[in-house]
Image 1 (cartoon, rainbow, N blue to C red):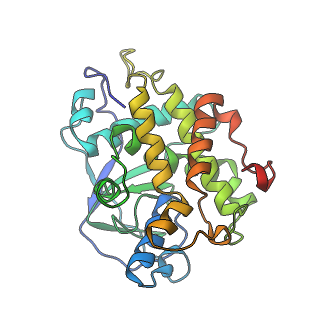
Image 2 (image 1 turned 60 degrees about the horizontal axis):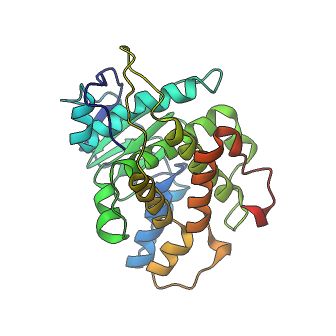
Image 3 (image 1 turned 120 degrees about the vertical axis):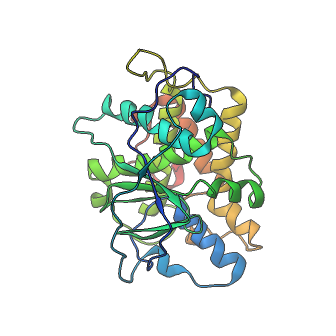
Length: 290
């Protein structure tokens, strides 16, 4: 997805933080859990402690503003600025659709930093930490997707990941996380429904991303091209449970699903893109319809 070169994006509140390796904890929601499972599958190392249990690390405070990130042109040229700039569009999208919406913090992770949900790094991948109301992303995660999981992880794919994590923030604000707590794995588990809804929310934002504007009335982003949509769908498919199990040489086991299959993830992303936020109630449909 391409920013308009003259869009003003310097008002974003994203921070860069890192350099500190902290103890791992639990409670993170999002694509990060997929990466932990991938590491376990490929290396045989048990990293399940990252997904829950243990003593969470105390979150670090502060952080530095993202440098050289004032215009859409800057965002087009740099992954970190692209993520920071996109928060302006995503926040505006949700402010228009959700009463009482409050902006989460975005932390761009440099190597590693601590959170209430544990260590954030490219090993844990992007995640949303509910107690902090913060999204943590290490941009080098996208290099991992490109190199290991057969996806280009281009600009729209990157912003799909970010919008997915913001979807978890919306679930936190609306009480979805509290009403449908983690009840284990499985094809119709609350975890799968939660992740598919976040995919759907991401698709809804993508469809409307050309509508959000800066203080001068300039749209932040150009409408996505079909190639960019294909790239985003490829990223969604790459982190499907069945694809991950296949890459690990395992037989597909739906009873172990935590995020949904590749087909489900792309379909719910597309449901949001076609039908908007109101098409994203993954909790009222039968398991067979997920």
